Length: 343
Ligand code: SF4
Image (cartoon, rainbow, N blue to C red; front, side, top):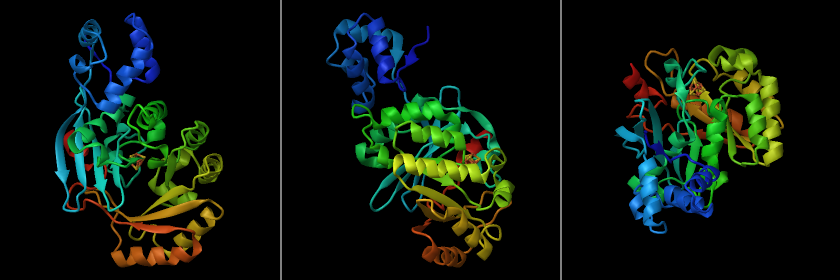
């Protein structure tokens, strides 16, 4: 029988596993610590287990991370990794070092079904959801490579829509934030969504207390519908109600991501619509110039245009940040590296 990979097992599941092996339940917590805290991959070195337990575990289970099959490093320090799982599915993970924080951008799905018209991942369609273990499997090997401090913040902004893989993302976050797990504070985790309103409410009620980012990119239903098919299923009115609900329940302001596309959403009327839409919403806005994807019909605005847009917005909004594009000299847009493999 094929060995089962323990990465992704919750504490409860490890405790059940130990009870099935006729061990006391607390052994589950010990194993949990070995897996996620110590990052031990060798059962024979789990020194607080008896020899016979180590042998039983070795016979039935394995501790396996996905393989890094390609990586690209930008001159600005951004590093992109292409992970491969057992079924040859690939996803991208990106380490983005900055002066005061090290963010890691993780994928939640292989491909994405939502097909935003500007997105390289969207062109791939959805291959499948990632398991909690496959989400964790993008993080643990990076710590092995670069040490525990290689990321301080985790953003679910890689390939896929995290709220379309809600259960596995939540399961992974529980292990990431656990003091015997990866020990990353929930406040340092951001789940970024294209706007799945009911799941935003569910995440608010989950008690996880992670940060939320909304990929807005257009401030009217009409315009949003032109670039994001998801807008047809979850209209802007209900979406903004869900976002407000998130801020009320968690006490956090939400991050509004607004990618500027040249000639599409960078005009005075867009600023007006954005200010109107976000009036009374506790938020900060991140403006980001589009990273062009070959074959897709959108262009990057000039730096002057980006500055102009932010300056117009700033006096009218509580917090406006222009995010620098990172990794311009590598396949920077999310999904480009994996997309080359698929194609
Ligand atoms: S932008 Fe996000 S939600 Fe839209 S297609 Fe790309 S990965 Fe999916």
